[in-house]
Image 1 (cartoon, rainbow, N blue to C red):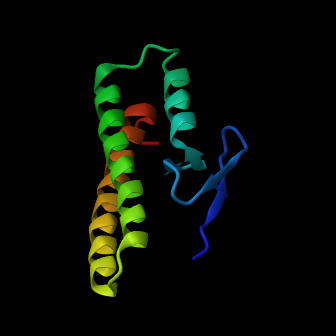
Image 2: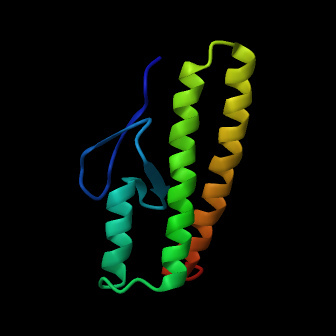
Length: 109
């Protein structure tokens, strides 16, 4: 099974499927690069509401990575499919929350 690879728009290094990362309107970005980008936007003084959303996104990202690992370990196609369904639900929730974070960071633009 081959893993997809992207290039982080902040640091220029590879992002390999299975790593913690996210997509923004600028493209794929490592999770730590994204956190640094948010810190930079607020000159190091990130509002608590933004930190709360970032912590929840971090939790979702950890869950997605863990479920992907479990998908590869599952021996039955049925369980693998069930895990994929659950992962896609979390990915959808993460995408919605990223939209909310973008509104917090950039307004409605």
